[in-house]
Image (cartoon, rainbow, N blue to C red; front, top):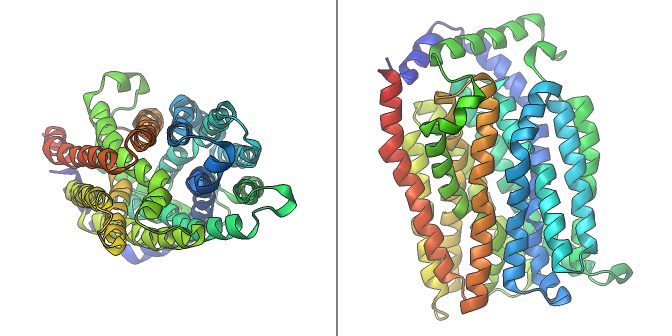
Length: 446
């Protein structure tokens, strides 16, 4: 019997209406606040893409310097994600999230004082180091509350906040940088870092008082509601069967390295789009920072919709492989089309923007579905450390892709060659899931 069939049989006897009512209550309590935190994290991470439109001229930085600074954020991720998730298991989610959120808010503000490339690189590294535990921490945190059949939808909702941040972040950055440029003797990009860093510090304080580490500690659930959640999680654990618990086996587990390779390829595309969308829009023929912000917002609306709808559809159909591979492949093909159109100045800008929207929506739609895969193979401490390991190593793509695009842009004056390379890498992610994950699952079911 497959894992999917086991899950179906487990839940067939449950009172679906009671379960749904409890999880509506859980989701309304957890997800809105987590989404707000992810919006703040995303704004503080990617506002550098908009600040670039002014700060490179102000500081006389090259495109290559920007690409390295944007990407070096992920080196901080690489070194600190695993320790952060290990600490979360020991001290709980709310203390961990408070520490992380306050830290990245302070570093975001300090970026307004950048004067040299070295300062730029150092602060971007520290921003990544502080934020490192947030994303994998939430991935782990959801397993404390949601059974596997509900995780993709919950995580899709959470991850859609990054798209919402794109919707809000573009117009907000454009407005701040346009209206506040020169105020108090500071540039618009400096005000951008200050204004977007302060809410993160405040949210970190709120996190300590608002968040609940585990269901049995939730005062906002009744005794019977806590029991429903605990029973469902226990049933789900039994249905998934025996999985690896010992984190020391992770480094020699081929399935873990397969998952790292898949997510690495997907994040090459995601990080390239994240940090270069403002430049792509400008190169397509739009010069105003304010207009660029609104076009980016339009693109991220589709990214948010794709994450929520694809995650929900994956849960409903209890299928992961094709719900990952099809959006990733569509994103890759659209990115290649966008690269081709950027190479022809006579091409209508609307077609370039349309291709960018599809590339962003396809790539982002695959992300929440991917995080169903580790649950097939890992549990307990192995899941806590494994999720962080997968994310931290894969996020080296976030260092490499923006830097390579910066080098290509400096050398050729065009992003197109770099975007072709990133599109090909994203196609590899889709192919790896289709070719290898099916065999891994069949092996598990035998």
